[in-house]
Length: 218
Length: 90
Image (cartoon, rainbow over all chains, first blue to last red; front, side, top):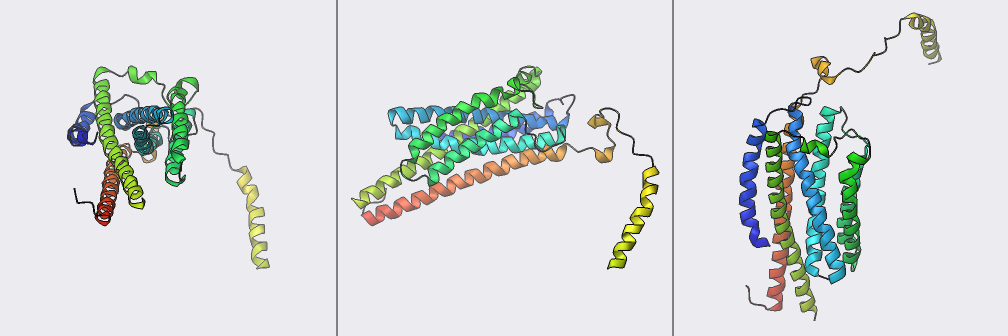
């Protein structure tokens, strides 16, 4: 997987170099004007969070039922990326809300469920770091439950009345705005794959180091 | 001290009548769109947009640096362990 790091880094760098040009050239949304352009980084961030939650949930399931150490390492790597991208999603949303809603934060269903998902995976990372021997299985359970919260996060704007736009808003975007959103989502997914490759490499090296320590003790 | 307190109380009591007869600030009648606020009260959008993108770049750079640093640390530790165990360097 780590072999993909360099080509993914080149593609991600090229896409992120072009993204600001595409965002600057796309037309303004009529009610929010300039600040709406946060959308082109905000929306892809949450798409990456959903992808990472999916990877973590499936990898945790595979680890629990097949005892695959590789799957466990993949779950740990993607959980860290959920926290990183989730943090940016919350901050970018907060910046957007400050201008559009005149508040930094609102305890509506979408924002609250987003904060809950962020906290669940933060707890996952803390459990893995400080949980001691056997914490991998507990963490895998937590990864599965964390993944189960993702549909609530996604559908929260449709199920409850919130200030946040509903999920159908994205599909109503005009063609040029939709293309830029799609391009940015692609760039973010490539970046996610690149970071995941690097992060899995770190987990693999740590596993090798543990094996070396065990061999040295014998 | 007591004289000061008495003076403050007296001045409050004497002026309260005058304050009571002042017309209250009229209540806002209806919603005012943000775009109709005077320019001094409107928030500029650019700092939020630029701030958001800048935060993303800084966060990603920092995160990549932390991964690189952690990988280097583990590799150094592995090399030291292999040297101690007498394993020839790869």
